[in-house]
Amino acid sequence: MRRTLDRLQAARREDRGFTLIELLIVIIILGVLAAVVVFSVRGITDNGETAACRTEIRTVETAIEAYYAENNDYPATVGDLVGGAEGFLREDPSGASSIDPADTISATTGEITPAPTC
Picture 1: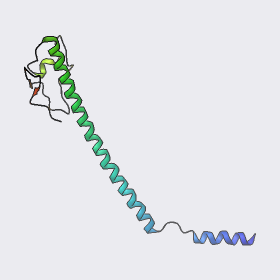
Picture 2: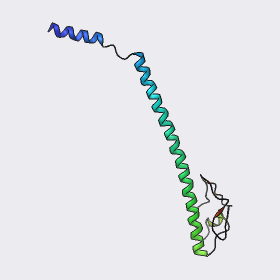
Picture 3: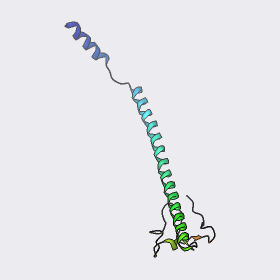
Picture 4: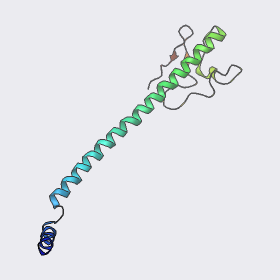
């Protein structure tokens, strides 16, 4: 019994915890991991804005083609697609793209001028 008690006391004396160097290394590793996460999240938000812009452009292009299919002519401006009896678009395009309701549409190809950029 005495021998077991001596071993436990000796083990407690040797158990001193972490050294300062070990703690600094852990803090540095956590800092590097946090930096990697921050830069990864930044890229995700940029990709989201680009995807929203492209989706908006495709929506306007689809509305232009629907207008052409119904009227056998392209609309003069993007604003002509909004509201009215046909209502090809619910509201003026805005947001991440550079589409402006005043942008003109080519009468032969249906392309928006100036071309939207994302």
